Image 1 (cartoon, helix red, strand yellow):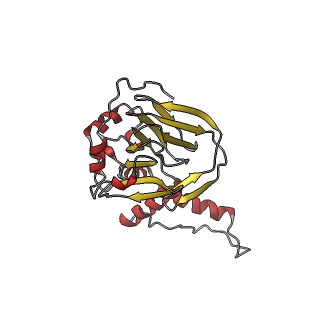
Image 2 (cartoon, one colour):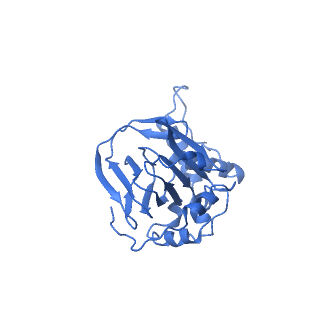
Image 3 (cartoon, rainbow, N blue to C red):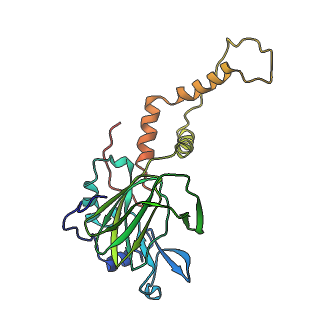
Length: 265
């Protein structure tokens, strides 16, 4: 928790401007609210907000840095983390009681409080059970908070991956979340396979003219496993890893192209 990490912090846009963005087809947005106690989620674009009332709902817009220059200025404050880790800048507007429910994220996030107040409860790492409160909402079970704090304009809350948290708005408020991600091994291997196919790479096969006679045709020997592993390792030479990483790490999760960022490998 960083009190007054930003002094005299001003919202990067107004709630009306944010609502207007969420009406656009190319902007990723969603609304989360409770209806008779049940969690609901809807994805934009939206045409109206009149039916939502004055309590218990949240509007979220992703990739604000694609649309609002001030969001890029906010990003510069976090450039102690390399840009290839960047997910996006997310903005949320919520009315009293609004939130998205207790959940766990698998990325680093800095929650920068704009106008209004929001209470955040953060739990410790642990074997927390998750469940679908709605097809589009993965929640976690109740947790004992190790942080229970009210964020005021200019305050920053940093959340590492894996810590359960729950934010509830106390008065109409906006918050701006700067998120950083890393890729899972399975995602990278899947993307690497596509890269090898697209570039017609990795076609070399094991060559073993010195293979000894086998006395058990059903056995995959330790030597065979070593050959297979070495075949995979040899494919991942520095040139391939550099080219693949450059392409993979600079892909935008949004449909629009992000501004070019110089990366060194």
